Structure formats: C-alpha cells, structure tokens
Amino acid sequence: MQKEMKYWYLKNFDLFSDLNKEQINDLSEIARFVRMKKGQSIYFANEQARRLYFLINGKVKISEIDGFGNELIKSIVLGGELFGEVPSYNFKQTQEFAEILSSEVIICSFHLEEFETIMQKHPVLALAFARKMTEKLQGLETRYTNLVFKDVKARLKSFLFEWANKEGKPEEEGLVIKNYLTHSEIANIISSSRQTVTTLINELKEEGVIKYSRRVITIPNLQAFAA
Image (tube, rainbow, N blue to C red; front, side, top):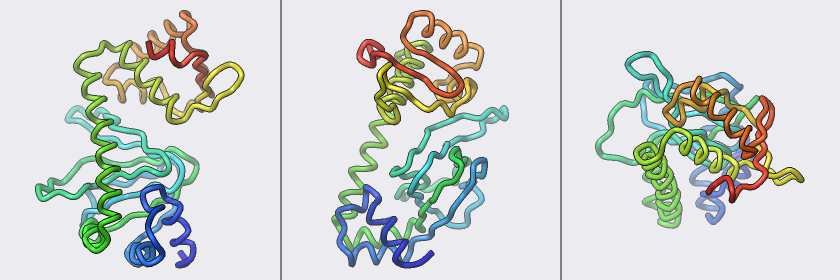
C-alpha cells in the first residue's frame, strides 16, 4: 500500500486523529495493511509474534472454540475499533480468532513490541491508547455483570439495546439495525441457546418491543426498551 494511503487511513482512525504528521509517519513505517473478504479468519494462535489490530472499516467477529467444539462469540468489532493482543508481561497464547463479517474489510496491524516502542516515544499516543483500553474493559465488565445478574431475556434486551446504540439508524418507525447476526450467533454472544433466543425474540415481537426480520431489526422506542 502506498505511503500516502497508509497516512490517510491512520489519520482518520479515531485513536490516531490527534497525532501530528511525524507521529503518523512513525506509525506508517511499522503498520501492515491487509484487505480481507467475508468468511476469512485470523487465527491468533497461529501467529509467530503478537500483533495488535485496528479495523479500518467493516465488521469482525471475535470468537473462541470451547472444549466441546462450540463457538463462543466474545465481541463484534466495528470499524474504528481495535482487537487482538494488548500490552502484557504475562502473555499466554490465545485460542481466539477473528472472522470477517462484512463483504470486505481493511485491517491495520502492528507487532505489539513495535507499537509499545512508538507509545514510549509519543506519550500522546500512549494516553489515547489507555483511554481506548479503558473503554474496552468497561464493556467487558458490563457484559460479565449481565451474565451474573440478569436472566436470558434481560441479557437479550441489553444486547439489542447496545447494538441499537452502536449501529441503529433513526428512521420514522424507530431505530433500525441492519441484521447480520443469526439467532445462533446472538445466542453465543449472550450465553444462551438458539432455541431460547428464537423464543424470546418472538416474545419481544408480540410485546411490540421490536420488529424483527432477517434483514433488519427495528426498535420503536429505545428508552422503553431499555427499561
């Protein structure tokens, strides 16, 4: 990829938007950009070196396979977000993998050690990265709290509420989400079964809380939904 294109992608990424030209150029020197198609996967366990990934556009699903061969979906990553390894002195090989959900995505990645060196050189980047990681940890804390204290229906409503806040587009009938997840995938995210999710979605439809189809999900009143 041309240097000018690398610079443009990095400068327009939220985490790097406050960096100056010199700082962006330093990142460009160590950045690796790839285009990937829907269905392709990145298997972190196969990597020889730890890498940190920044999703330039599109959607990626982060999953892990448990001891019974079941897929556990840990998160859905949107354009402008990061995934992969984080700085740690207690590194353990992960069994996670990232699967592309969009028709095509652009991903920027860095060797973790090189990225840490750049952060040491540019404290403004280290501060922005720390803020981003705090947001991710808060999201994980919310998810685990939901698993412990909420029943399945409440977890489903909480997930749909968060999904609508992130990706919902306001239209006359309410917030509309492009539906790209199957019932099985939603079940994996909220730690339930496909059958239960199907039953609960039908209940929410009957209650008038949502309008659901394979193509879109509409939430007429988000605040009432959250309650």
